[in-house]
Image 1 (cartoon, helix red, strand yellow):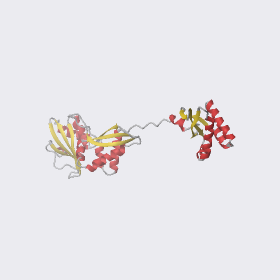
Image 2 (tube, helix red, strand yellow; image 1 turned 180 degrees about the vertical axis):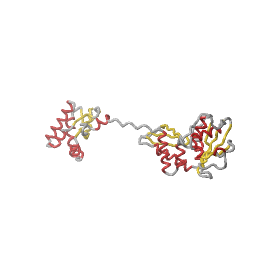
Image 3 (cartoon, rainbow, N blue to C red; image 1 turned 45 degrees about the vertical axis):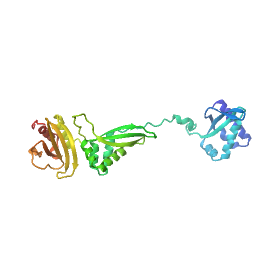
Image 4 (cartoon, one colour; image 1 turned 30 degrees about the vertical axis):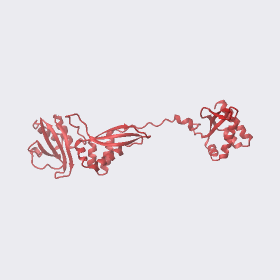
Length: 323
């Protein structure tokens, strides 16, 4: 405490003692005193005065005693007002502050030292999609979960007038999945809700979730997504290794062959239509692939059970013959 404030507090203590307020005198004697800002210029009739705002910092028992009794607080303020009052000065206000244990000061001095915690980093987009897919799977929508596992997520912060940040999410889906969602609005809404739920954080809210087609350079094939041992992934990789371009056309569940995936393949200058059936392929075919004409064929998922089998089919399709 600076000497001027120490002298001012001593005067208030002596005045309270002289007025018979020994308890209040002892209370103020154990308190801290500080200026809370620059003096204010007041005009009182024909004179101008400098009005000071003071703060009395006390321990918890004294704080409770003063704030619970308006008369005692008024007596302390009147003592300081009398000590401050001169032809040129007045007391603007006396605030009573709680002294923080350990710090020995009021929060008005300590809060600037309390740096806010660093906001956690935004989770990786794949982690958000993984969480959303797991949520859909737990809700019984395995097909929607598979769509998200084949997708990519883009996220960008957008302007916000509130206290928390806002982020816009774009889920880039396989074209066949996006086309299927165009006829299934309920599943599309479930995908949006799952991504919103997985992407929301304490310091950030998801403003919107949009479904869009996956991007790729003109003429380039999409990178296969999903489980590495999925028949579609095996065949796509085997075909691309031989220079073919593979584009998913549709995916479906159920049907005579258990549902499956339809692919458009450009290989050796030809456009081919391949269906990977979840169940056994209908009709006979060379080497168990269920084909006689490769330009339009159905292949059972079990016939792509290993990378070697997928490579054999890719060799047939790309005109390279069987190894």
